[in-house]
Amino acid sequence: MTRFLSFLVVIFLLALPARADDAARQVISDQLDAFQQDDFDTAFTHASPMIQGIFGSSERFGQMVRNGYPMVWRPAEVEFLGERDEGDALMQDVLIRGADGVYHELEYEMIQGPGGWKINGVRVKRTGEGLA
Image 1 (cartoon, one colour):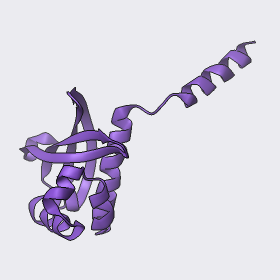
Image 2: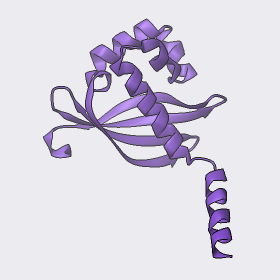
Image 3: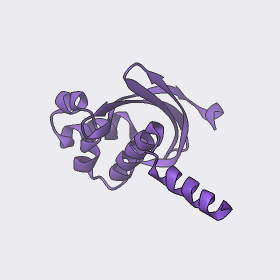
C-alpha cells in the first residue's frame, strides 16, 4: 500500500503546472542563451509586444542590448535571486557578472501573454563589487 501511495504522490506532483517563477526564469535564460549566440531574432521573441514595438526589429533590439546592456549580451555568470508579484507583472531579480568581471543586479519585469511569459523591461538596480 505504501508503494502505491508513493506512486500516486509522484504522479500528482508531476501533473502540477510549473511555478510561474520557474517559467519566467526559463524565458530569461533562453533569451540570455540567444544573446550568447548573437541570435537576436530568437532573443527578440522573448520581448513583450511593447518592447518589440519600441525597437521594431531584432537588429535594432540587438544593437541596444550590445551597447546598453553588455553584461546581458555576454554574461560570464548568472544567478537568479528573488521574485515578487507586482499587479499583473512578475519582477525577477537577477545577478549577472559581466565579461569585465563587474556584478550587476538587474530587475526583469515579466508579463504574461497568450504565448507565455515575456520580458517587458530590464532595469539595473545596482552595480559593483559588493554584490558578489
